[in-house]
Length: 168
Image (cartoon, rainbow, N blue to C red; front, side, top):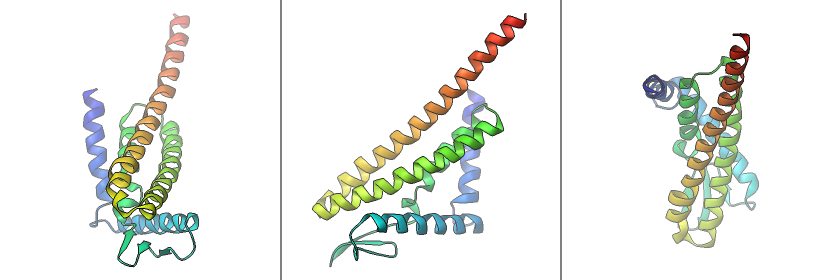
C-alpha cells in the first residue's frame, strides 16, 4: 500500500508537470487540443448561436467559459496516476488508460452541457450545477473506473493463485 501511495503521488506530479502545467510545451499543446475538442462537441449539443469559441453565452451580461481547468484533463490525470501506480500489466494499463480517457472526456462534455442547461434556465444555478452536481459526477465516474480496474485485476490475481495452487 505504501508503494502504491508513493508511486501515485510521484506519477501525479510527473503527469501534471508533463501534461498540464504551463511550463510544459507538450502540456500546452495537449490542453489546447483537449479544450478545442471539448468546446466544439459541447457547441454541437447546444442551440445554434449560443456558443462562440470557448464561450457559452447565457445572456448579454453572462457567459460560461470553457478553460483549461474545464477540459477534463485534471480528473483524467488523477485516474491515470492511479492506474500507473497500481500493480498490473502494461497492456492492462494501456487498455484502461484509453477506456478512462474516453469515459472521462465523454462525461466531462456531458457535465459542461448540463451546467450550461441549468444556468440557461437560471443564472443562479451556476454554483449548484458546476461545483456540486458537475464535479460530483466527475469524481464518481473516476472512482468507479478505478474500482472497475481494480476488480478486473483482483479477478486475474485470484485466477493466477488458483493455477499456482493446482500446480503444487
